[in-house]
Figure 1 (cartoon, each protein chain N blue to C red):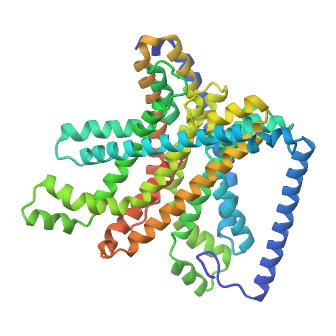
Figure 2 (figure 1 turned 135 degrees about the vertical axis):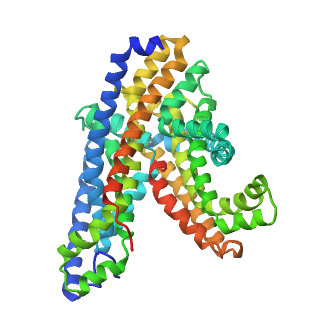
Figure 3 (figure 1 turned 30 degrees about the horizontal axis):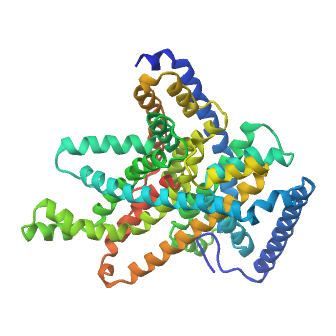
Length: 216
Length: 287
C-alpha cells in the first residue's frame, strides 16, 4: 500500500500521459473515422470500395504492428515528426476503423422508411439529414462509440512499450523496483484504468438517457 | 440502390457520381504513386531489405513464429471459453456469494489493459524469456471475462418460454441451464465467439513486449539482423491480415450453416435479442 502512496505523483503523471494519448489519438480517430464512414455510406461505388479496403486493412492489422511501422519504419524513410505524434497517429488510424464502423452501423440502423417518408413529404436532403436521419442515428451511435473510446484508453498502454511514460510504463518500472509489493502496484494501477473506463461509460449512459425517446 | 441516405440516383446524379469516382481514383493513384516514389528514393526496394523473406532460414524463423502465434491463440481461446462459461453461469447464479465475486472479477479484468495484465504476470513469473505462458494466461483472463458477458447475454437471449417450459416439466435450475439454456445460447453466440477469436489472434502480437515466442518476436529477430524494420513490419502485417480474413470467412461460413440449420430456424427472437446485445458489446471488445 505504501508503495502506491510514496509514488503517487509518478503514477498520476503516468495517467496524465495516458489521458493525453487518449485525447490526441481519439481526435485523430474521430476525424478520420467520420471521413471513412462518409465514404462507406456514400452513393459513389468507388468511395465505398475505398472505405471497405481501408477498414479491412487497418482493422485486421494488430495495433502493435501499426505502431512498429510508425515508430521504426517511418523515421527509417525520413518521416520523423517525433515519437509522440507517430504513435498517436498509428493509434488514431487503428481506432478510426472502429469509429467508422460504429457510425456506419448507426446510420444503417435507422429504418429506410424514415428517410423515404421524409423525402415523400418533400424534405430536401439537408433537412432529411438534420431533422430525421442523424438525430436517430446519433442515439444508436453513442454506446458503440463509447466502447471504442474505452478500448482506446486500454490500447494506449501499448505506447508504454515504446518509451512513452504512461501508466503501464510506470507500473513496469515500479514492479522492477518494489518486488515485494507487486500485487498492490498491479491493483492500484489497474484500478486507475477502471476509474477512467467507468467515467466514460457513465458519460455515455447519461447522454443515452438524455437523448432517449420513448418509441411508439 | 437506395438507402436511408439517398434515393435511386437519376441521370444527373449518376454523372456526378462518376465524376467523384473518377477524381477519387486519380487522387488515390497519385497518393499511391507518391508513396511508392518516396519508398523508392529511400531505398526500400533494395535486395537487402527483402532478401530475408526469400531465404529459407528466415522463412523458417517466420513459420516457427507463426506456429507459436497460432498455438498461443488456440490455447488462449480454449482457456477463455472454459473461464467464460464458468463466470457467465456464476453471474447468473441465484446466490449473491457466487454472483458478486464473479461480477467483480469480470468488471476488473475487462477494464484493465491486456498489456498491463501480461506484464504483471510476466513479472510474477520472474521475467522468463521466449515462453508463451504469461501471454496465454493474460489472454485467458481478459478474453474469459469478455466471453463471460457474451455468454450471459446469450443465455438471456434464449426465449423465456423455453425456460418456463423447462421448469413446468419439473427440471431444476441446474438442469434448465445445462440442458435448455446453454445449448441454445452457444448456437446464438457463435458469431461473437469467432470475432473474439480474431481479437485474441491479434492480441498475441503483444507477446513482443515480453519476448513471448510468436510472429512479432520472430520479426524482431529478422530486423535486428538486417535493419529492415519497415519491410519486416509490412510482411508481419500482411500475415496477420491474411490470418484474420481466413478466420472471418470461416466465421461467416459457420454462421451461414447455423442459420440454415433447422435446429435454430425457429429461434429468431433469441437471435434478435443477441444482435441488440452484440451491438452494445461488439465494438468495445473487438479492439
